[in-house]
Length: 470
Image (tube, rainbow, N blue to C red; front, side):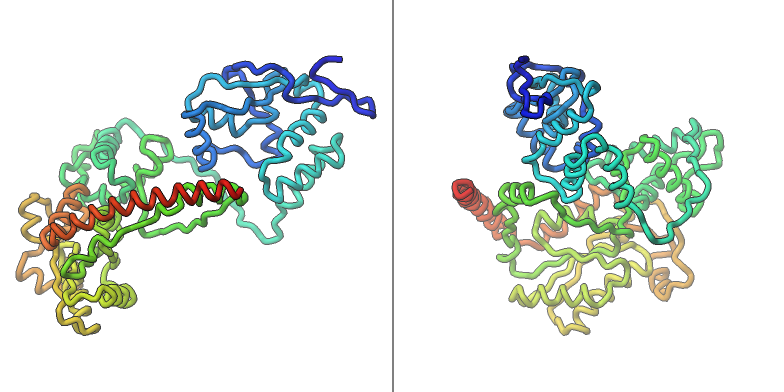
């Protein structure tokens, strides 16, 4: 009898695993089994567990050989195969079973199921396995029937109308696209950025929207911003710009941290145990400090600075509603300090100036904080001159705050997005540093480093203790 076979009482051949010697086989010669995705979930490159496995393989190699058929289809090891590819391996250790996938499909599916008996599976995957177990000869037809029944939607669905194919990007759009790409590359550390940030920074050195039309210079109007939006959309679809390079702060998306089972969750929790510590770096400061920004389009840029100092930040999205102001006051009262200091960033236009004043005034008058002090670190008249910002629009005629602004500054207005992200961060940093007790802040930083060292020792002890219990 061949060493790869054993005979059961029913006389049918069964396939024995683990008897063939281990050999190194090139990844390009190995084929994932199509049936694996029919029985189980697809193995994805962006799965956190797969990425963690890739890191382990990068450091230690593939510790458990893959099981493959004589014609190099994977029976056991699809996750290791994917992780090894992500880790950059050229070859992986394998054992062969005495079976060709094409010769005996039923036996191959049974073997695939047996090799995955111990893996963590969803309810749907377990159902698929049982369908295969009950009647191997009709496995695929039963599986398809089950999937069809499970996928039936009893509600009326939307009829998707005619096909719409995006127009290719012409050569005439080349200079326009290059200007966008240049801005994104120069500010890659701040990605993703919103279209408004791109729009206002293009005004500093405006490209032609169409290379063969000399009068199509990019400007601060609706046709230009619409052309920008259309070009950015097509460029992302066609791969000229990374899909994740652009964000839309006005349309938040909520997802939930789900897991396929408790094994991955436990591993993640152990890896992150005691790693979420933040020391209150502001606790030694004489004043309670808060940051306020007018709009979400720049909040992500300033948030990075706020996080570095552990300073709370509020994004008002225009004239801020009452609950965020109430929450700010509650933080101030909880700090036990006598002085409230608010650092603000708003547009340099009639409404932007009034937003800053009304926010501070509300904290004083609506909530009775007599000691509130407000500093506008951007955008100011002085900064407009210093950075030589081009005018972006005329003050709105309908604005109730127009008369006061125009009498003092003139009709030209400027938005926060006109300042490059790096410069905006520098302005926020300078403003914070100017009001800090630097010695007290550095002392807190030193204490945080010691806290981190103490926590790491404790974390390792706890993980070791849990592993012993397991």
